[in-house]
Length: 229
Image 1 (cartoon, helix red, strand yellow):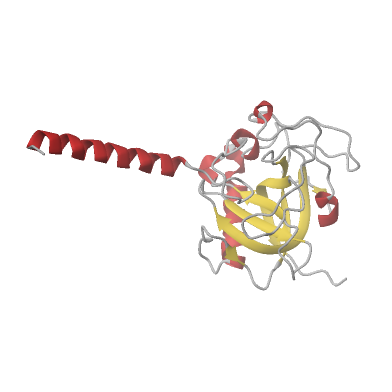
Image 2: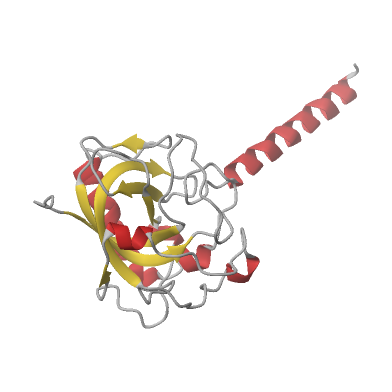
């Protein structure tokens, strides 16, 4: 191989390597922590509907949120709702996407996602991480609604100081033991990584989400006293 050919070969190799690096950096973990590369519905999950007061939350039990039915007709990765909230539909709780809710449970694991979000799972009991609900607290730099930045920063700091010994969560997931009891306030958000009505399969750890409904963005995290009954 002559000198010119060697230079061309090295240049091509460098371009390929750089392209792979860029592609890898652009990949995002999905909000359920299942390892997908599509970051879904970013304008929705980083904002609240206009005029919404984040301090006025609807109190729900874990069981109520877990039993919230899927909105009818939403398809997997539905492009209709990339930048639009799922319309209101009849349901026993009279809730809709975009409502601010407060729910309590036991914090099981916190993961530092590829997009900078803190993804965490909370469950109904301290003993089992299965049948969990997902909450995500976004990176404050990525918020569509910059007015939420102080709330998001405070929520992330609360997670770090009360559950992570002041550090960042692991990208592989930091398990929290014993699982603390937490009250979580944020937007009711629908994850369309599955079509409405589809059975929810196990994640990479063999665990199951209790619902396709999530809290995203998470705005307030309160480490509360465990209930006595």
